[in-house]
Image 1 (cartoon, rainbow, N blue to C red):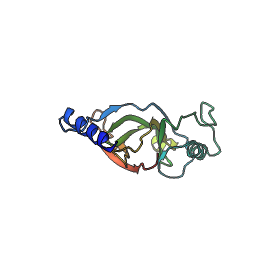
Image 2: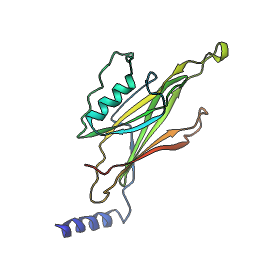
Image 3: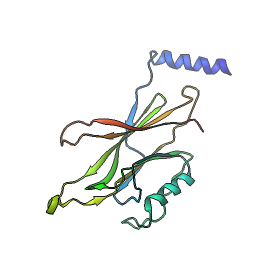
Image 4: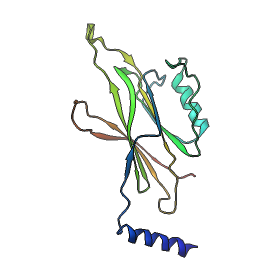
Length: 179
């Protein structure tokens, strides 16, 4: 059996010319964002089971309600998917964090978020308090023979100039070791 697996790896490397497969880039399976999180500080979490999902959602809610009235978390099949959640704590003029890209390949997944913000005008600038958050539901990353310890990296775009390219900064990294 080991010989067959090793032969398969050698054939795969020969077919690809010895090169790793090119990373695949795309959107998350589904994403949510808002500006009413109850968290007091910055959080970046990898959620891989229903219990952690319900706890995260309940902590995010605090004593409040979502504008659309969803008090309980959306259903997620954690056998096939996992969630990456980010919050920034109290801030100003933010709608949330939008997951703009998920890049997978070579035992890694990079989940990229943009902070959605807006400008205000008024006394003292007219700023509005917020507590921005974002969630990306992505395909579950599992250890395998080629990548026994896959990595999920979370990045945030620091670019604030309209029209300029993104400036990605790593905000968290998770090593996935359990099935």
